[in-house]
Image (cartoon, rainbow over the protein chains, first blue to last red):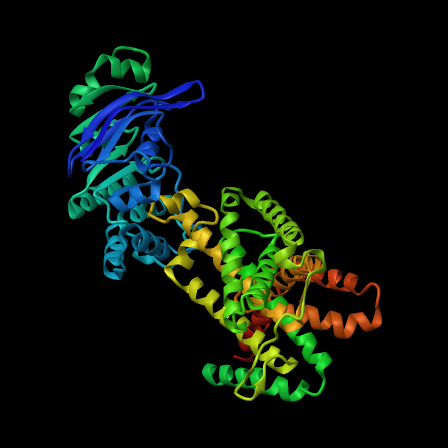
Length: 237
Length: 317
């Protein structure tokens, strides 16, 4: 479905991504982990078209993504959330989803919007101002909801669980699992909490200093000495 | 009830005003001028409120529309009404030249548009064979007689500009209520977030710039055929930028009808009340009035009136 081949991103003299290559299959769930500054969000920005890569190739369902603007990638089926929630300004929660559905999916389907609101536990806040009056969990849910409303086949979630306390995180994870199964989505999720990632994703990619240093099942990856070193500087966790 | 009030307002606007002021061409002329400013104010507010762009250069669209229509009717014999629409199209085309400025934000965009306006003024001055140069164009064809009504007169001009303003406001309202309007509103502070859900933000902004330019161009074209004379300093005067901005802010630029109300209020107050009292300093009073409005009701006159009306209803309840 999604293939990256030797993707590089340079910010001035800093190489934020070095030769990143991997593929995500239809319906696959992949965890993306790595220390702060490893290049995880940069990777999402490249895939969603927010920034252009310095080199390499990206394809989505056989179509090259190079030169394709971010809004066209959304229409192709690549949905994403932002680490710091970015609700659409001057809009209610429902209007956020309407904009995403009308433009991203090119449809007008209020029933599907209600369904998304229900799945994410936002029905009660549908008419609330999206920039205020929402709790952190609701803001995070809205980030997912906007992406879902574009009718994606690949969902990129950037730390949607960060900052949530344990119970909220567990509930949110369950919702994410339900959403993924309901819409048969491929999922790439950035998360620092390794047990959470292990519970949600059968495959984990580890990024460090812009390089993919491990790719495999969570148990094997989290025992990988290079991964441990990247997190702690030590060879044991 | 709302429909009856709307119908009554239309009857007053289309029949009452001409009947009341038909015998006093001076007053009717002032109302036409106020509506001319109102038309630009609506277009300016559309761009600011929906497109999120503050323009200091609407005089460019007004001037291009004026000259476009005047030249088409004078040199190519295009009938006046089609020429007016083509004048609007010419202004919309001129806005295409401004598309690179869409990359700019806030004051930078505003200043870039101001520079464009100056360029168009220079072009109008230098293209003497077409525009008549600094001397301008004289005897621009007036609006024709239609169904026995002389549209070239004050009353006819009033009916035309009133229709232009109403249609412009209705177009603005239609866009605002559409999915486009929602997306435009959404992308003011969060453009990247709107783009990643499939909104082609630059296209939408360009469309708003073109629509705003078209409306302003049509108003400019109307004015050219109404006064039957044009010169670059007049057609591209900063007055066509400053007064509509003041009117839109005074009336409430975040509303559809606020700019219309604002234009009628400030222009008629200025000309009928302040100018006779202070012939050489009446604009100062206008400035003070605008400052007072911004301080007391930043949203403008129309939202203030609505609040007052709602408050009174609650008080009576």
